[in-house]
Image (cartoon, rainbow, N blue to C red):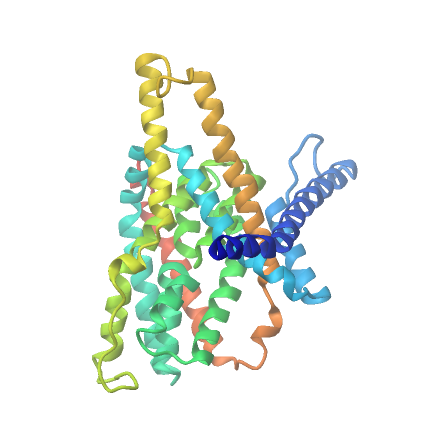
Length: 383
């Protein structure tokens, strides 16, 4: 009884922040459409052109402005955090309905060599420049895992293993936040500049060059909205989810690199690694499960004339289109608005500039190797 009451209280506490995130998302969509209308009425764009500004891009900027110019009372925080964690995961899981399981696994497998190259670049370049700039090895290790694998999640998983200090965690998270945010807002346009004729290459770039899962989702949505290429969402999402799986192998690796030079934790013994299943991002299984559901539905619809013996092919298509669209438009849209609302620029003050040089070098290195390899070998990816 008490447990149920606590759950209800937590849900009620999250409501203001969720509503604010939804309002910011809708404001961003409306503002982007308004900008498009103003540009067409001024004859800067041809009549009927889509807005050159994404609603997601605008929502993130509105969220940042609200957070840093107006400020947010504490009662919004729980809902914003909920949107960042759970609306994002729900949106990604629902995207699983966009692809059959075979398509998802095939694309993920094709992206593995590129992912390994980008992760390796992020790790070793970051650790090398950490030593050259005489920065904390713990800090360098955190920035390396955050840049190479999956952003803040990787940092928080690595921190207890190497006994990182609070200020080192804050520095690393600040790096991932600021460079990932820059990538999220501007890499879609860079991807279009290099790969305008190939959404698969653009999606591979966004999925490997940007740090955090939320930031990759935001960049893919911006690309899809501005350049009318929904396939980029599928490719970028699968590439990023495949990259996230590597957290299971990379955290033991960086921990070994950290401790091999005799660095010990405060107790004098090597730290204990988390269990592998605690590192595995479970929402990836949700994505694959819905991809499997889509595969079975398609097979039964074409084989017997009814998906699962219940829905005609048109109704089945309407079903999965509605829910995948709901995930990509609304759930991920709310999560992206929450990204803006949670970005407190004041947190970056007083941190010193040298760690940001390391983060900049890491981000540019990963982005550059991704661009180079996709340009050279991207045509080998057959989807």
